[in-house]
Length: 464
Image 1 (cartoon, one colour):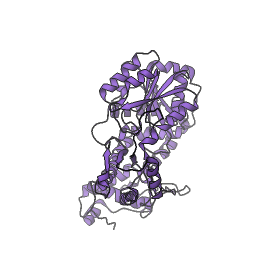
Image 2 (cartoon, helix red, strand yellow; image 1 turned 90 degrees about the horizontal axis):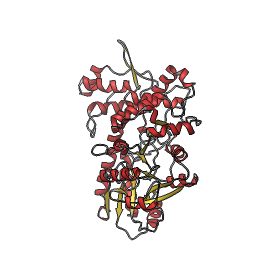
Image 3 (spheres, one colour; image 1 turned 120 degrees about the horizontal axis):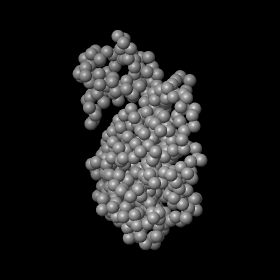
Image 4 (cartoon, one colour; image 1 turned 180 degrees about the vertical axis):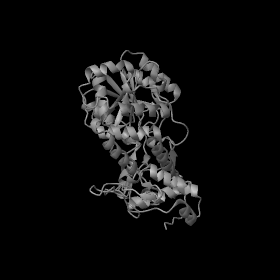
């Protein structure tokens, strides 16, 4: 009979620990498809736990498609992927990604660890979609995306971000970069776009490639500087107020209202609110969106499922103010939706059936555990007296300020030689003549596993 240890389960409750043990054995092939699982009563007796614990673990496994039940026969391991297809890769727990990497520890990459993606649920929903939506899958969707997904997004935004939007306002596209291009066409190539400095470097490249004017705006401790924004004569402010990258700053409520006031002072002024990482705020309640407090329809909200699901799922969406919808559909409705029906219907079910909420809760617990272990390891490291940590509650990265005589270039070279991929805050500044802080490292832990943390500390010790 199956036997698992319950001596060291960390913060997991009993049934979650049992669920993870069985799930791991199914994915590794130790429990092949068709294997009959022990009865709940005999399994509980063998493990020394309650029948309710086993029942809850089986229920979770069944709801995610790992196992199935047959009346009067019991529970059996499901076929996760058809035999004719390539099986889902199960990477070695010592390495975060199946592909080879030149680095032993990567604090920069946003790649998704395969262990963290809900493959079994996604497979189950794809099968259901193909079975139930054959006609819809072959029907050309509206340029804004299929209505079922847009309705599911609205329900999610209402529940999680307290946003009241209609499905008609939702425009689905293949990632935020594609949507940025649509917005430039919608708002005008003659406009000047303000971007955060420091900030997401790809934005600069997107605006440059579209041959539109952009201007970097400095930040203070409350967010984008209003004084600098007004002096820039910009028409559009492109910001990430709920979790700025890379500083981690959350725009204060007073600054949010000041930004909305700035937008209302010009006829064609708008704010593009990039809410890319809001689901992974690890302490306190989610920060309210600018869109939810906007009374003048000046905020265009953008988000993506790239961070929450997988870096390879190129599916984003934007919420247009109602008065911009007519302009969008009269001038840009010739564009076909760039996301396949298969992906849209699958994601719609993932959202509406409650799987997304469960996934976010599970990932939030996972990331918090990784972050806490990493912070504790840094605190107890030989170099702890030479560093200071800030913005540890911001999201999937925090800042580490280092007391060193090395320049940032020398620091990155030393890290590279040690096999550690790092980035510095100074790399995200546009050259505007202002003082750029040095010796501040961005530690993105989204691809890190707890097993890697001791090695990470040892390697960081080499150059710190």
